[in-house]
Length: 299
Ligand code: CP
Ligand code: NVA
Image 1 (cartoon, rainbow, N blue to C red):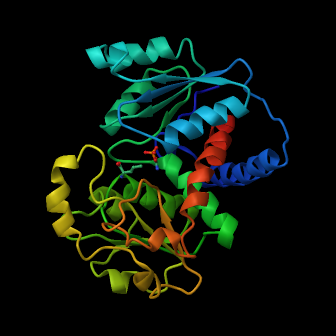
Image 2 (cartoon, rainbow, N blue to C red; image 1 turned 30 degrees about the horizontal axis):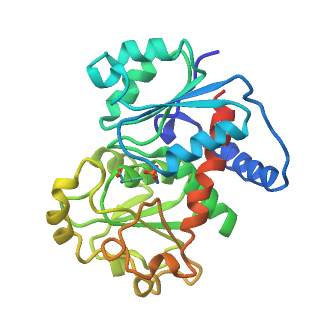
């Protein structure tokens, strides 16, 4: 059987993604009911982190534990990856020992190169371009609160970053409308917007953008690796903060999501996460269930 990777949401078909979401909901119920499910006894996940993480690391580690398997945290600081051993060689070696690999890195091409030389499934745990695992959790959360996301209107407010690019892929795969509201100069990848112009459009004005939104999503203004642009970005994004007042202009059933970590007073107002429309804590928890479903699918 050919090895399946999960580098972007496009690596699974719409049906397969739908299956993973349903399975995530099922695994969550099983866990709540105390049902032991250990399909991964003796299996190991290699976890390569070139950037910081709280949710991603903990959710993958806990998920592997709950499945009866184990995980190894690999930081470039303590491995030969940080001393220049080629990605291709690292992929060949690691995949001879572990059963799946998860990578968080900078250039998206790094996970592509790794996957091309890996004999086991490779999961993108965030690159500069995409964060597909987060999207599984986001879609699961929407489905749990509101039912199917197909045909709904999702509005992205803020930076056209890795999360935003993944929302474009999600709009295509889960068949919803996506309005992207970023200041000029901070749009998502133009090729993705063009390719999905039947369901994705840009809108500069946040108040106009959120009209009739069923889901409003934002993320930090400066992503990991962009720390030096913080001050300049704060200026550019000043009018793009999501607040309860902005949410009032959306559909009355609208939900709010943020992949976290959040910067109160920047991309969100101080009270946004505590607003009843915010489902960020469920969203964070669902990283665990959605990735367990993904691992089960890939393995
Ligand atoms: N949302 C997310 O990926 O969080 P971490 O950076 O903490 O993993
Ligand atoms: N866009 C953010 C997401 C963090 C989970 C970043 O890349 O830093």
